[in-house]
Amino acid sequence: MKIKGAKARKIYNSKGEEAIEVEIRSEKAVAKGSCDAGTSTGGFEVKAYPKEGVDFIVNKFNKNISKQIVNLDISDFDDLEEVEKVFGIFDVTEDLKNIGGNIIIATEYAILKAVSKGEVWKFLNPKAKKIPGILANIIGGGKHSANNGSDFQEFLIIPKTKDVSKAIRVSVEIYEKVKEDLKKRDKDFKGGRNIEGALVPDLLNLEILTLLKKICDKIGKKNRIEIGLGLDIAANGLWNGRRYEYKKFSKGETKKNLSKEEQIEYIRKLIRNYNLTYVEDPLEEEDFEGFRELNKGLGVICGDDLIVTDIERLKNAVRKISAVIIKPNQIGSLIKTKEAVDFALKNKIMPVISHRSGATNDPIIAHLAVGWGLPLIKTGLMGGERINRLNELIRIKENL
Image 1 (tube, rainbow, N blue to C red):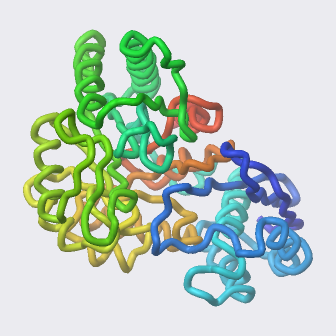
Image 2 (cartoon, rainbow, N blue to C red; image 1 turned 60 degrees about the horizontal axis):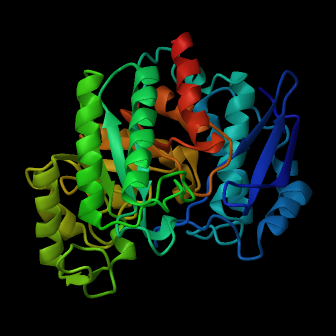
């Protein structure tokens, strides 16, 4: 496919923030791409946008960058290297502070859609056979919620079934049951959602875990399906440079500070007591050795801010984590994202492709998950920009 036209425009994401959409035109197709932008971001990520803002990079793309992209010939995934070389002309910084990573990812998404005529998963792997399991966000807190939210950023579930429609249905059933129970506990609870569509109860961390586990066990038994329970601690938001600060720790001590060693032991107890099958970012983003200590014998520890989809950081995390979050705009390159995925799979680290809080309606991460053979996709359930990734999995499954 030869690129005949490239255009960027400003759109808005699920938080009402400015975002970028790129449109790519070939002789036979027109396709658009856009990507999420996070709220809780790792310190080692590339910049999503330049400091001058979205209008600046949209204008720069349309006046300068697009001219270098037109006439590029794309026939397979590795040809995206030529696209990234073009962007490299305009930004040589490691953190992409001059143009931002989102313009690159949005462009690459649009190119993949154009060259594949919308079937990105098949373009990546015509022999793809598996739909990923879903890691669904039910209850939210941390930076994703108001001040009354829990200390933990996400309370997650994993319906253990190969039937994606059943996984979605059971997840929604759990979500609605949690909302129903929260209304019984608090007559003023309106079922409010955070920026990722998750419920936000004014409860202590352990009260939420206990409630969610009870409901998952009940609904899992009813539907004859095992429901795994998970957490995204997002420990960067708790870390003050010396200790982890909790505001909703327990009934006896709502406010409590934990040392690194105490945090590790606390997470171990949570895993044992609630039979957790997934724990993301339990420690702050520079504590590789702490992750190693916590990961011993557990096999459920996932790194997000620790890795930021960077293969060099991932290499340093071998045998220190058992899973890694994959977010292409953290690294600003689909080529580098794929390298991180391949390295993870070769080193028995489970790659989990993930949404972000400032989401657009682009469902392409569902295609990446299938095409790259990823075991899990992390997303929300409520809101069109969330459920559309899961609905896309249903569509893809029909064509596998």
